[in-house]
Image (cartoon, rainbow, N blue to C red):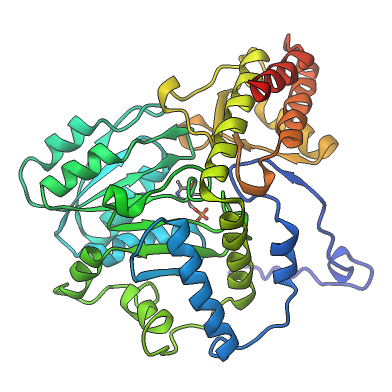
Length: 403
Ligand SMILES: *Cc1c(COP(=O)(O)O)cnc(C)c1O
């Protein structure tokens, strides 16, 4: 017999008190801090999901997202759910059981794609690369050689390793073999160039809470005409009713047929976040992330830390560094959070406890925040007995910023 566990919510208990949300400086690779206009959107009066005013917001958001994805794709919308919902929707719509998919795997998110595609019953061909390295175009070409592949899937910014995957060459190879190309831009959209039309990406998805600096809970997705054609010509219906992109298309762009109760305030916030991206300007925003990413990495190296990703493929939006020998990962991150109110992330999968991952994303990516995280990390390392010269990290970052 299973004993029933009930914790009573008694008067005076913490659960009966008003919510306490501590102020944090969010420097992990998502979520980020929210710009004032985005926070403001979250306290707007709620409307229904079929209110003409909200339908207008959906139209605005779709248009803004087309500019952010640099695409003319008609089917450009935001799904309810986090980045993972975008990944799931991508694979479940583009793949049917038995169809062949080639997936670049050089970190945790590539592995997750493989897992999802296997659950769909697809014939999954992983193209592995070591964590910290890119997926080689030649390896993708070899995997496509038999000519039966429906889809090639890549992670643009591998958040688990800080690797920036070049897309163009693999996109051309996919096109040559008449395969569709899907791109995970969860960690890159709004931070570094994501050029969907120019590269020939057929489906690209992202998440609201990374470089776009909206709260978590929405997954922007854009699908090319070719991608939608493939979805319309499926032999079997999409196994997930909730993630069926044709149904979302009818709610966003077609007859406005009810599909789900939209997370209206989250979409308001995403609308404002995308507006701010375009107000800053895509080019200016990419330049800001590149510059701050370089400065942070220069600072980390000046502290004596070792960056994880191979030099030419370092992702500006996620700095991954090795935890030095003899330093306790959890204690350092705990100290940053408790004493400085700063969140950074640890390693994932086989690198749990062995890496720190610091985000250079959206609203959190600023000169003061970069120098602050370097100073705080140096102090935490000093207390661990590591020979870090705190001043050196900040000085190197400031020198890189002046360059
Ligand atoms: C964060 C992330 C995801 C998953 O997004 P969630 O919002 O956590 O569901 C997928 N892919 C990449 C590359 C990511 O960085």
